[in-house]
Length: 298
Image (tube, helix red, strand yellow):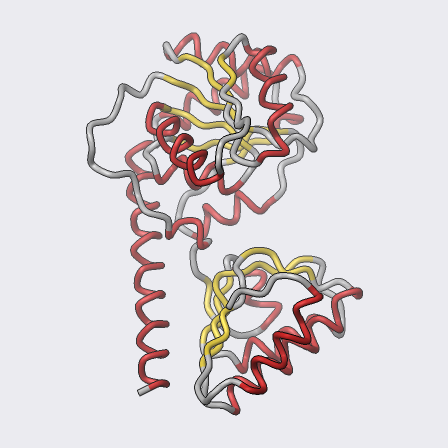
């Protein structure tokens, strides 16, 4: 059973109370906000964790990152994490705040790698930017456009998160590139379409972490190039041993941004190797979790 909303909490607690022995509780991966408004939620999650352990079950917390930590929400969350058999963090800072568990690659790296079917020539530079950010400035536009021209790449903008569709259209117009809309396409079909697009790309520029991860899994070189980038993408790739993937566009001119993108293009083999190591690490983690569940239920 998958429960997602606050209205599901009573049903969730009732299911745990009435569940047979040795149930399994798996939390979602991603960011965990621990500001003052989340202390009641964390108290509920702590109670659920205690209940599962009393029933001889297994609690799994996939790679997560702590955000906006405050007391007592952090203390409650850390207690629950310590009581869980698996507490994984996608960055060292979160692991230190919780003072337990281990650092592991973001769960996005567990997605299937690019298959070995015949691939088209990598002759595209793909851009996918957040719609909530300001439109990139003239220097950014010049850097991306000139990089594509020098490298002989066609420019295409794609949409991995539906709310970014208008921005993708706007950026394509500014860059003189091709816009690939989401439209009415089913999300599963859209992911398959994106994978095909990333297989055609040599370089993918984005400020969305999972755009860059999916691109890297499909053999493209990822690069974060936006004004004042957050540390989320930098940290996620540093955890797998890939450094220098981000550049603050606000602190660089067009030539500096172009040099950064050119340097990224030379890192293809390194990134493919690191991404595969990360994927194998997550396969090992999953195997360990499945073994623990089997033993608990034996």
